[in-house]
Image 1 (tube, protein in one colour):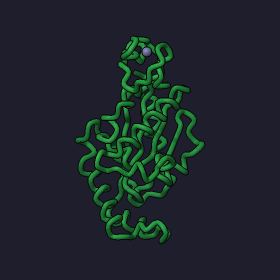
Image 2 (cartoon, protein in one colour):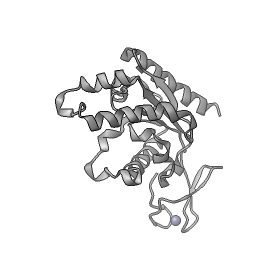
Image 3 (cartoon, protein in one colour):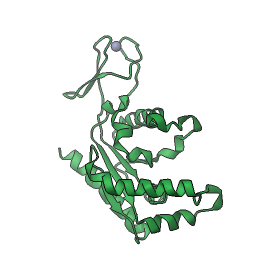
Length: 214
Ligand SMILES: [Zn+2]
């Protein structure tokens, strides 16, 4: 999905979506470009909740979707919490839209990607179908234990970082059901990684199947 109009050559990210095609309609010349409007799946949670481990465990195991970790594009210049990391998520959504033009939806793993307010306002969001959110959570005690067990260079046992992650973990548990759209919750407390990975794989396949049946 290129933002340059194939007809008039103007660069516009804000094309008008005609869901009947679907078409992305150029606001300058009216050219109607057909495209695939696929769902996007987000797997999130605080640091220590298990995103990276689950992503690694499922890598190469799910053929129906393209699994990616949002950290691979992270750069210091994206670190702008004041605007909800907008530039970072616009970049990611543009990439996900382009990948899904090959016919498979993306499953994006990342902490901030699981906060609907960060994604739903993005200009690029219009080129995607439904966004399905899943957040991995665990007990405070287990999250703290996992973060303290990390190698020292990650500085995961620093009080500020630890407190932020505990608060983020709790925020998901308290607010997931009332967010727009609601976020599904998977509690990984006391579970082996294989169990959590199998549950996330099940959730991914269920959402893709549900979308396909619509
Ligand atoms: Zn045009």
